[in-house]
Image (cartoon, rainbow, N blue to C red):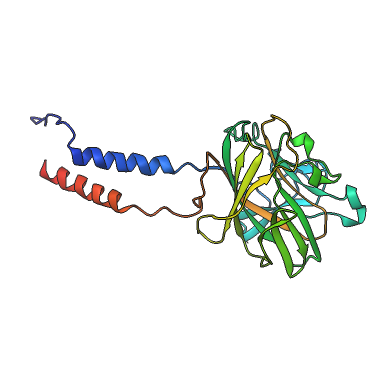
Length: 285
């Protein structure tokens, strides 16, 4: 059979514009998943780190302290949808903090360290689990996993939003004086964005629910501990009261990004038009 080759032609302006629209859409998709917790098999082991029952995460997360059974991989909406849940031991007072921490620089296939002298965005979801009487849980970033321990864990974080209150009156705060979400609904997931500036040692905090993009709730909140010029290579959470708090869907982006990584992006008008034009040009060849 004789083959008929069609010589390549130079791209038209329309094709070039379509390519630009496609590349622009790709450029905006800057989120990288750190951990959804769904890959962990918690059917027989739920604890993490050096807990006596074993480690459901095979070393990706460690306990605070590393041996606690107060940090578990738990089912969320189904057995295939997991989250990380922690709670404290208030009877032990200042030494009663319990939680979990992960190494952002080495625990995953990519390095998710929040570098010094940079702007980086961390996204996660947080939920107040019903049934507790009192809640006091810190969530955020510090320099190394070794920094976060079970003694007064609130003093170990640099970036430290926290959940605080009693049942029926629990708030999400950026600092002691800044309430971002007043009276969180129990058993409801809230989206949180931390836009971290490690030059100024401050962070902005955005929140939403569902698949909505972030809405600014606090700006220029100071680091709890400045940590000098250290990069922030650990993400963790620790609770000091009996109330359980869960996190899920931890994401990373360089720069400032407050789009929702859980939302399915809708094609833009320009992109749809460009794709239609490409189809028309192909039919005319």
